[in-house]
Length: 149
Image 1 (cartoon, rainbow, N blue to C red):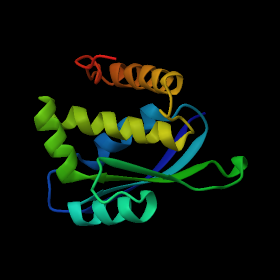
Image 2: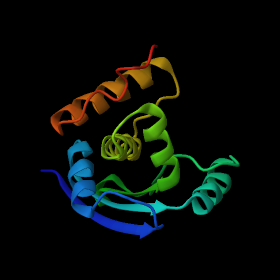
Image 3: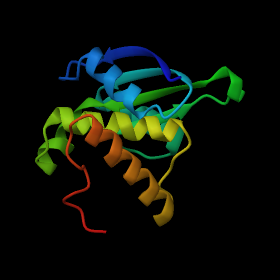
Image 4: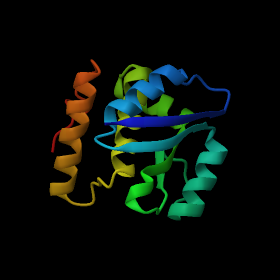
């Protein structure tokens, strides 16, 4: 049985999706078991600082995933941090509805928390397939439809 406990944090003034939507998207991307996840929406300053501190990158990125290293029987625990200005800019640049881009990044981050990655072509293909499936069930279009591989 899948069960998700979601903590929702809004630390920015930008437009962000409501908690109910975030819960729905995150729950859809939980493939099995139980999870406790915090989703935090931040401004560019906090996004840049977190990306610098944890990844050594001097810019704000769209989503950061932090999984807690706990025994498997404790269930999945982790944090997703979404930088609202970056997400809004990317959605506009890509001509995508803001909600669709947020849904994609929540699903993407949830898959990262569950151990999926995109460090090589095979991993990227597997992760993108899962993202497409989950987003399709949620009624969103393929986020990779306009990209060439």
